[in-house]
Every structure is written in structure tokens, then in C-alpha cells.
Image (cartoon, rainbow, N blue to C red; front, side, top):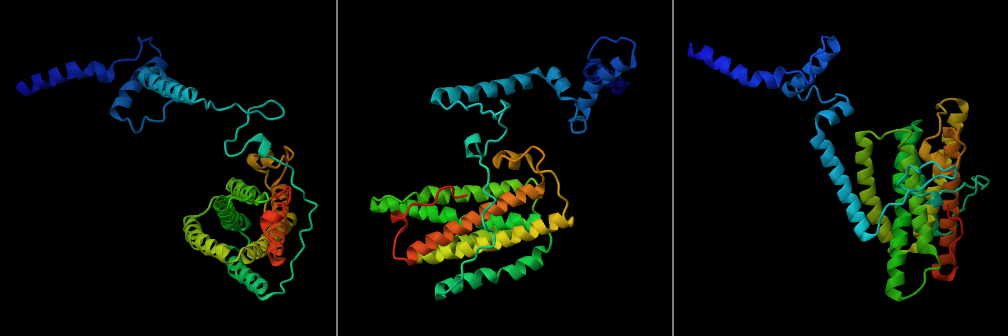
Length: 327
């Protein structure tokens, strides 16, 4: 008898919370369903977490208020320090959607550049650099085969390292020796950023597998330190190595284009980020993206071979201005 009374008391207290309708009953099925939903959400919160956002906001005004308060705090901090984010727009007046680059960072690639140009190795350091890079082609071709997008991802994670290392070392040298850099610090940093944008573009085409991510971590750790030491020992060798590395990049993207033209790889629409970054037509295709990326790599090839030649002539980079339009 006592257990029955306890059960009745429990239902009298919990019943209105679990089974009460959210709004007065109207006799319709829809009204009944709306009344049951809050109760079900209290019993099974994980299963009911995907309900309509507007409904959740209406039923949980405290959460909406918390979100608004957080936004107001961010605006207050930005206003205090005078760093209000600017609202950027495209040329047609639409809102600029990217935070990783601005409208004035965009450009039209010079695709008329000679992609077949090659520096013939003559000295021993040149030959060492050339064959070191060439030795990497066979394992990469076997590893990636015709998975060109995945190959491009790995290639860009490596290609973005040397200009950043070179730029940092030249920056430190400029500070240490109280001298100008001839514009090479900015040129190398722009090259590094350009290579990173290549990576961001191909991430819209394909996603790396877990073991490819592991390979990138291992390769970056080894390559960064090796190139850092190499640039300290011999900048002319380091730039020559990168020149040959960029020649291989041009070759890889040429093979990519061949498969796109042959229909072996689907010529999908260009990612939106590529259309804005290279100012491509709205109907641009993946082939157009690979074409401009290859042109960028060709410019990097020429600039690094040029930097190496400067050192071979007994000059320094500060004495020879960096080439304009580095990418």
C-alpha cells in the first residue's frame, strides 16, 4: 500500500514536467506532437539534439542570450583595442568570404611562362642537388601513381618550407648585421604564402588520409631541419635545390594536366577559393586551377635558380633586388 502511495506521489510531481504540453491543446495532431517533443527531449537529450535550431532557440532563450552576450564581449574587446574586423567586399560588392587572404592578395597568374625551362647542372653542388631531387621522383610516382590531388597535397606541404626558412634566416641576418635584404625577405615570404594557398586549394579537391598526414608530419620534421642547416652552410646550394624541386613540381602538374585533358581525371568545377585567389572566371574548371598553379611553380623555379646564380657570381642577395611578381 505504501509503495502505491509513493508511486502516486512521484507521478504527481514529475508528470506535469514530463508530459505537459508546450502549448494549450488544440485537438490537432500537430499540437500534440509539439507538446510531446519537449518531454521527449528531456528524457532522450542525445537523440533529440538535432531538432530545429529556431525551435531550440525559442525553447531555450537562456542559451540564445548567452550567445548574444559572448558576441557582445568580443565586440567590446575589439572596440577597446581598436581592431574592429573590416568588412571586405569583392569588386561586384558581395561580401568577401575568406579570412586566409584579402582581395588585394589576389592576382592573375602569368601562364605564358616557359614551363620546359631547365637549369643544366655543371658544378658538383648543382649535380648533388639535381640528383637528390630526381631520386625522389620514383618513390613518389610509385606511391601516388595517378592520385594527382593527393600528390599535390604532399608536394605543397614540402614546397612551402624552404622559402619560409630562407626568409626567416635572411630576416635574422638583416637584424644582426644592420643591413637591407634587397627585398628578398618579402619575396621569400610571399612564395611561402603562395605555396600554402596551393595547399588550401587542393584541400577543397581532396582530403588526406591518416597515413598521408603522418607522412607529412615526418617529412616536415626532417626536411625543415635539414634545409635550415643547409641554408646556413650554403645558400647557393639551398636555392639550387629548391629550383630543381620546383622543376619537379612543374613536371608533376604537367602530368596532372595530361590526365585531365585525357579524361582520366574528372575535370570538376574549380573550388571557390581558387576562383577568388587567381581571379578565375566563375565557370573555371579544375584544369584552369592546375594550369595557374603550374605557372606559379615555374616562377618559383626561376626565382630560386636566379638566387643561386647570384651567389655563384660572388654577389649577395642584398646587392641584387628580388624579382618583381615572385609568384
